[in-house]
Image (cartoon, rainbow, N blue to C red; front, top):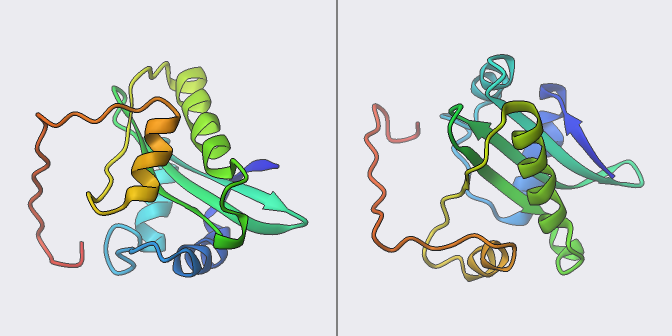
Length: 142
């Protein structure tokens, strides 16, 4: 069952990210205060897949009013291959469209993450090799 998570669920979310091997910026953009601020701004939400009251999958969804972003998608390793990540992506897209009218969905994936690349291609995401990602950070851990 997919449900919207709250910031109070952050310890479980962080533990899932760690078990799943997802690199996070816990002193920067993934700090609970930062995520709480984004959720309260109404430009973000957390979705979790729950099985027998256990959090087994999570996605952090953000938007800039034009594009929706799938962030920090992770599923516990023992649940891989069951379509949970696909369900979380679909629910994120559905909510972005229904609540905000957003029709463009994006994600950023490290080039060596073949599992995520395969997943997003499977659900219809296209790779744009003519786009380059640049960032500037005030702090290395931001």
